[in-house]
Amino acid sequence: MNRDNRRGVPAGLALLLLQSAALATELAPPTVEFAPGYEAALRATYGDREAPALRSEILDSVAAGLTSAHGSCQLNLDIVLERVAPTHPTMKQQLDDPAMDPIRSVFLNGGATLTGRMCGADGRALATVKHERYADNRSSVSPGKDPWSDARVAIWQFTSKLLDACKQQTISAAASH
Image (cartoon, rainbow, N blue to C red; front, side, top):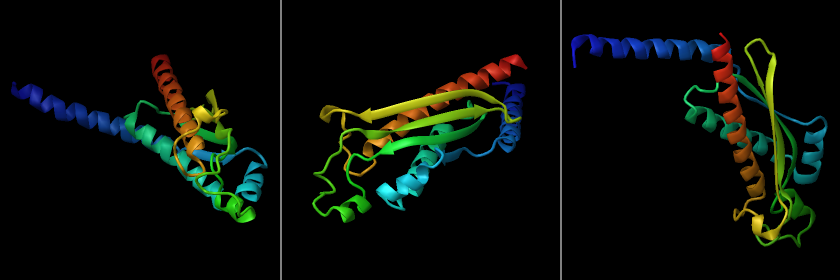
């Protein structure tokens, strides 16, 4: 390897890091909201601790996806949880009905509906992704034993669709400049 190539690699890497840092400062962290009025209904039906747990699950999934995307998604992401249903009873449901077993009680139609909007740095909406997944029969129920196991599957699937669309929008935006 000649000396010029060795100097060019760090310079190229430095330029890439500077560009990534500049883009990162323009991007807001992803937001997660609930459909209008839905958070109150969620808390009343499933308990106060479930809304924050679901918000964290969505943010963690998107953060992990963004990390593995290595900067290929350079848009602001706004996410709305439209609807969610547990696979197993939540703590509140178990307290409301002591006959429910946290493992053996299984609900069909556990899952979630989410919508994600990708926006440019100027706030303009560029694309929207919607995903819905509910385990509507016994064979499609997640083997997980926590209340949100099927919702978690829906969140992971949504994250994958959202980041794929974000990568495509980022490529399109870069090509238009």
